[in-house]
Length: 399
Image (cartoon, rainbow, N blue to C red):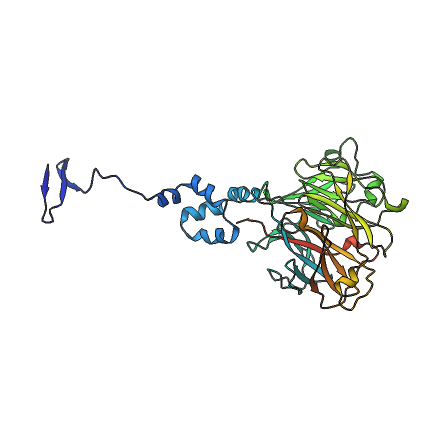
């Protein structure tokens, strides 16, 4: 039955087990606006937020608990990254032991402070797709400059003595976990996984293929200090021969990879640069220190061979970069970078010791840009220019 109260509001009166209760609006359906329906639907929300740039997306976490849950989900980070390949925006450069410079590619003609503080007793060992491997006198840890989170790496049973150098493997398009891989030796390979927070020893028999062996004399010629991770594998260049080795991190297997012909018919390959950009391997190799004309090689996507990607002539760089004009005879290659993802934005970042300048050289239109002037003189490993302590800074979306 129903009755009318003083406010003329209709209420329903029910009797249950002898007790009266009043239920207001028993037959009214709740109404939601379209924005509320979308904002509370995780599937729709993911489809919308995945197209939002990083900075506003970070701020959207405070909108509601549902938005925070969606954006903070590691799977969402993977989906977001797959729509855009993270690109390097700067370099970490250590011209002197335990002194770091942060060099952005925006051409402000000065070096900057890094996005995080680095103690004087800490070295950057490797960088990989936004993560940085740090080391002090006896510890390793992996740091994410974007989130300011770090992970201290437990020491393996064998200790760190036989681990040098360690390679960092991280692919934000596949997983939010990373791995550390020691350089191969006669006892095999040590692999650390952040997923299990433990080290594993891979014996030589378990990692070599029918065509490779860690005991092969070719391993003595590999340059382990410049291991490069891309396409799921760590790649090491080789001083001699037509082949080298790479290690597939997921399959935990070695395989043979080709090397370009040694320039000038020499027996020993002098590698000036070995790195990757946009998941493509690049290499610069020439014998004469005064060379100003050279080729930039790129690996085929199927790893069948190397081909000449760019022909470079730096003869007039000294006159074009310096208002006084002088002949620049020494170049040190820091990185080859595709700045904004387009082919015409590929630049070669170089250090000119005669002018103490870091510049970028566009490999398509030959334009030069001053990036910064170093505040002090640099001591370089002239015998092996690939040992320059340079690392790309990439800011992926990892929350």
